[in-house]
Length: 259
Image 1 (cartoon, helix red, strand yellow):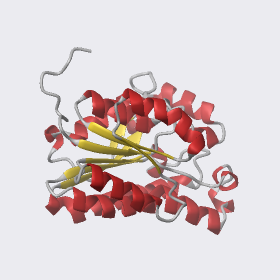
Image 2 (cartoon, helix red, strand yellow; image 1 turned 120 degrees about the vertical axis):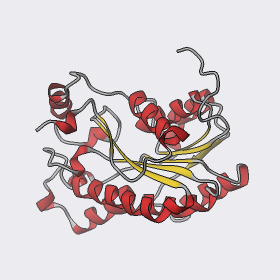
Image 3 (spheres, one colour; image 1 turned 30 degrees about the vertical axis):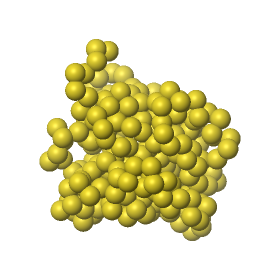
Image 4 (spheres, one colour; image 1 turned 120 degrees about the horizontal axis):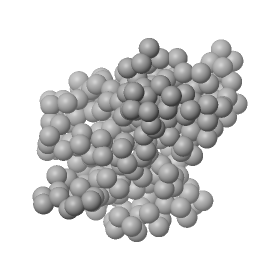
């Protein structure tokens, strides 16, 4: 790739939450942001995940590599304290975090437990609201917040089960946050990638069938990869997208337009 004379994200500060390994959508975003000039901070779930994420952080010369388990009280606040100490500001926030108990994820919505549904909603949706609350004061000059959704938020996708309603709530939350934060120059985007072989997706039942179906239905005839998603998110963070906010942005090769 030829170097861009003036990288469009040069000097920007990006926090990317949810990197698990080199197959993560979050890693695609972090890589794209760095290629386009941003300084990038990463989070990882736990010590086991750190062994995979630490080498990636070195590749990006990331000044911050921080633990973030949303189920542990205080860890989210600690991340933003470190960002504030190191940078004093933030331009880009990416939330690429989702979780549900396996027994609830692999069963139908009708059979999902109240506890499992609430946990999935807290980790996969409300955590983005909490992040936005902490990030907004650091975006005094405006900024971009991105949360990862999926087509199952809009249409029924076999075996997506309780994550469909959870992602629908996430997209609605993005719309309301876009409304509430727009006057501050902060844009909020739910981004909906096509299916990708990530660690999180491996918990879905018959995921390979979902991948094959997406490729079959795509007008482009191929699946997306993490860098397709990363560069789309990078574009949304540039001044070129300064009047785009709130609407779901699909990066799926056109699968969402098919009946």
